[in-house]
Image 1 (cartoon, helix red, strand yellow):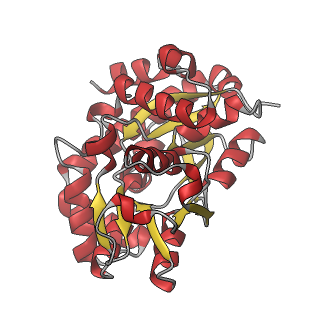
Image 2 (cartoon, helix red, strand yellow):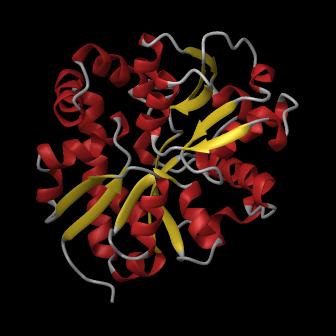
Image 3 (cartoon, helix red, strand yellow):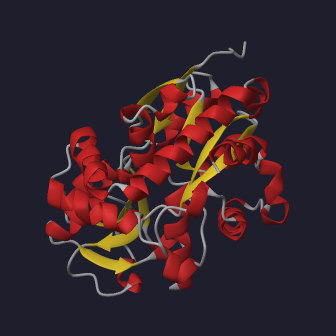
Length: 303
């Protein structure tokens, strides 16, 4: 049974993209809106999807492709309620790799082979003339495990890595090969998403959550040093790396989405890429996966 409560259980991928939620906790924005928010770091997209589907968590912050996957598989009716960012992903390869075409016959590390950043990677490979039989996808979990896998075994030739792991990959001597956005165009990656029935039963709570999140986002953009401190304390990231990550996610052109708005063009592109891999292209019906009523109400509260 859907529970009505001011206590929220939110599952997220660990990373600098969590800064607005960290700020919401540390600076009292959630408390000011009458909320207590737990943040749980997921080990991978499978755990996140299952946790939303079975009600272990109320909200997810993760690649929205995973929400679409739940709907397509008939596991849960899920909607996105706020936009976050494009994912801050980079395709990293072993140092000897010069071109995408050089990944032919190689092992490539992904979270899950049928969702999100794996589908971006598959499309990048396809545009370089590589079909699915030309490489092997190895599912190892979240970004941390993909980086560790590439460092531990050079046979693992490539992976999509986001922050702060991309900076760690630079320092480990791995090579940046491509920025997916430059190849694929606008892409809606991270969103806040939840089961539709939970959203419908908890609109007041969700509106207050989004309002607090937006306040946390505004605080993050305005308080560089304190925000970097949060990355260090919450993620254990060295301060110099945290500072680089902060400057990336707050960049006015390629950083956090302004006011955490969903990029509808990027959302449609995400659905189109998914459609190429699954045979179900819902890009013309993107709005069916969105419920922005609480977002609109929250914007009114904080402007």
